[in-house]
Amino acid sequence: MTALPDGILVGWYGDDFTGSAATMEVLEFAGVPSVLFLDIPSPDLLARFPHARAVGIASTARSHGPDWMERHLPPAFEFLSATGTPMIHYKVCSTLDSAPHVGSIGKAIDIGAPIVGGEWVPCLVAAPPLRRYQAFGHLFAGAPEGVFRLDRHPVMARHPVTPMDESDVAQHLSRQTGRTFGVIDIEDMERDARAGLSREIGRGAEVICLDTMNAAHLRVCGELIWEGREGQVFAVGSQGVEYALVAHWRGQGALPSPDRKKGAGAVEQMLAVSGSVSPVTAAQIDWAERNGFACIPLDAAAVAHGGGSAEDAVFAAAMTALSKGQDPLIHSARGPDDPGVARLRAAVGKAGLDEVTANQRIGAALGRVLARLLRETGIRRAVISGGDTSGHAARQLGLCAFTALAPTIPGAAILEAHSDDPQLEGLQLALKGGQMGSADYFGWIKRGGGAAR
Image 1 (tube, one colour):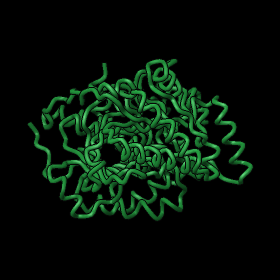
Image 2 (cartoon, rainbow, N blue to C red):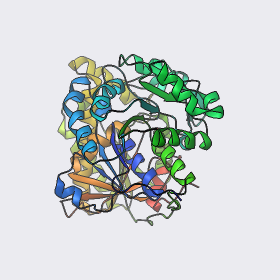
Image 3 (cartoon, one colour):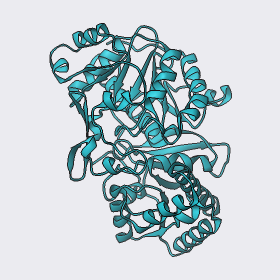
């Protein structure tokens, strides 16, 4: 058995809250105690989690521009580097949501790589447990209808902020940074990945993309990243990075713990808010409505203009639903074809706002309503749906950290919240990306989760 080094094994900085939490759950449920902070933690806050072997910081970088990243990323990477962890991971969405002007992954590489150092930057976006695959440099993502190349994906090709028109990972990221890219492709993975790495470094590649189609490839990637490091390594990618490390550690006998599968138990009532426009979330809202949830639409156009009355209206409707024994689910849209989406875009254009600002306002409004409901009712379980929404909404709750409580589908576990507010300490909260989850996801959370069926 090969022993892992003492101290922090992995430090990560997530570009959205759902992905940050998904990274934590991969590690925690595999037997690596982990904690996710909502900002760079103070020494006192960090000391509250003395057994953590992995430390993350959740951010909303995916919805900000390069200037914001220049201000916020260097202190975070410096903090993670100072922990002495061998692995510093800039966590991005497994569907590569980014563009030069918003959520630039290339900008994050330009900031992080010089701080951390290392001979090469591993780039692993694929995550087969999530139905995310990379072959010969091109990214593929699953959907209810099947698996699609990213630029032909029914959701990502129509993303409201970063629509994907390129599936080649290196080509997509080359629009965001001037660094040189390479790829260790499927043939390398099947034959000799170490030789492929030497070849690409010899060609001058600074960022090397890793093809991955299955569990065996994940283990190879984990070995390349972990065993090939000298000092600290800066990696970029999805939670595929952590899946790969876990696969390698287990293969070496260094991580014998089995995955945790137990749920958190059912509750009588829960709360949910959603800012996602994904058709996957729309189907989940439809299921919830058919199964007794009170689905309450938020006037997103009014919120984008700063209309507080829209928040008051959905708060009142939610309180009424709770009094009837229902579970409120407040949503800004039911999929991309919801008439409210067109109204929002028209209102945003008329007011001269940009969509990023409008989405931030909607997410924050949902968070404020959720915070009011939690404090008014004492309910202890909730869901925030939507990758960008989760960050802006969760920040309204006054939380300081999360630990993973119970699994559901990969990437959308039930978390335990930590707060200085006694009313919110121990809150059970699920953060769900827009494309994540089965149709009955909201009901599944109410039942307490448990490993995927």
